Image (cartoon, rainbow, N blue to C red; front, side, top):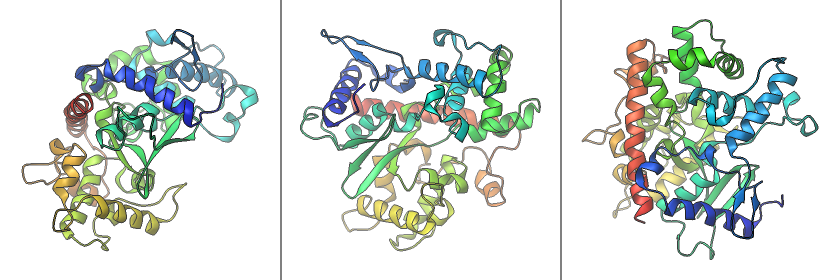
Length: 370
């Protein structure tokens, strides 16, 4: 397959755009973009037909090889993707994304699949359209999107390079859920995913509906947020990817109305493997926020941030961020960022599920009527 260049990148975007134009609001809200045919590796017929595997099929094949060659699970067989539960697909996603040294060798056929829902081409294209930076009618004229890893994309707008960020991620909260309620499930993302995959029939029926509901939407557009690349992974260590904590830090920064201040941002923006300088990450985020979210008097404008990012249902009538469960903000200050009991887990999963659907509906409506 030819390398993705400017010409065929636009072609892939046109295919996605054509699909979006045929979609309705309900289908966009819950759409799982790993069901997309992998355009980077598919075949295009003369009549416009597209053939090839979807991302979950690639994940399944990669997982099967890893189970045999790395994890010594020689008798395990991954079922056909069409028969997979949501939990099994989540396990494929994590196992196939394992990029430790001995699983990244091309010659063995099980190199990590470099795919993330929040930086998929479909979602990057949606970000560009709903934020007004890509004109659907003039797509061929300008396309500020480029690929930075095999299946990962970013968009350049002005002085900033933006990527997608999953607002409330799955790995941390799911791991904590099992730690609290099922000690037989190993800790650690890969070990946990292997165990759940091997015992999926049991856990498919055992998981509460509120967990399964969240699994069905956590990777949908309502849980995706466009931000500078210095914002995404650097916020994990300080917020554990709980979106209400992130919003609280941003709210405090906007309320302080001082472009040079670190108030609020220092509580949510840290450092990561690829962005190791916390001070630079914070400075980049300050420049991003202060250059876009200001009112006619040039004051920082929290309400503009909320409206532009479709976050109205994440704040109360006064614009204050809503906790994902009672006393989360107080608990987080004491080091309790994750739910601690069944009531808190249930509140997290139900509140995020409803908020994701509501925000997804707003984005889908904007996308269709743009």
